[in-house]
Image (tube, rainbow, N blue to C red; front, top):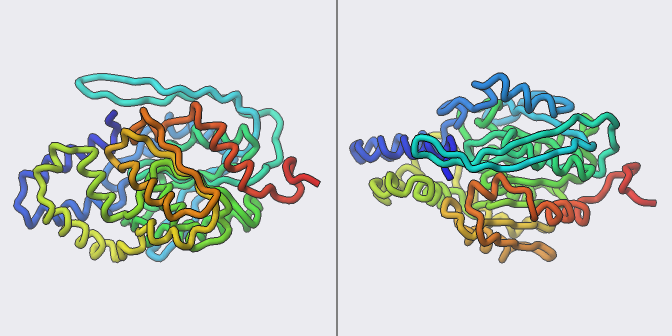
Length: 348
């Protein structure tokens, strides 16, 4: 199933294959680290009706300055309540393209609930916070306050470059500071991330003990290797026209251009410092980011971390999933995310 980011990448790689070798690596490097929302305008920016529909769910929104390098993140909160949430995913086809399209229905709750905890939701590469809104509504119905974050260079956030963890760990630490200052989070939070966002969450947990539990959907174990694997998975025919040497040069140039170190995105190495329970979920048919990434990460994780491989899912279908993994995800946070004092679930 191909979405906007797949179409964009395929078109870009097809053009690169026609260029001289010296140009290929430079343009690949720019595609990798230049803010995705500067390369293609996000739907929440170009489609006002789409943005208004999702903004109607949010109890509050704001922008948070972060850095270095300087950026401003777009954040939104979905408070716990009964949204009468109904969600489905339809397969669409037109002009030779196939894609999955989510369908949302909800009703804003009439009665507020106290939160049994706060879960921060992190979207995937070249995506936006609206693409994890289905999980926000699902977890809000289970009593969790959900904070959705447009990572730097994504969605409605600012920033000229992304850092595959080099910048994002500091950004997310600042997010947790701000949530606590606003009274929207206690001493510990949960994280649910998809792909790039899942890996950013794991890197954060290695540095910040305020993270209590993680659900990691289809994470990568090493950012530099995953970037090349992603290109081959999304656009295999186009990527096959680009040499391994050009990809290697592009990876090196990307780090120099954005001024970061790829070692900061080595999630597997960071797992040594992740001492909290992680629920890994990956699709067996994922060719964009192989399930071997989750297998490797799980092998370094502390007990009682778990790995679930879904036999029929690939990268896009898993990112849109709810269905039969909902009880597993909710149960994970119910078990491992401590309820704050005074909440309905805090106990005696």
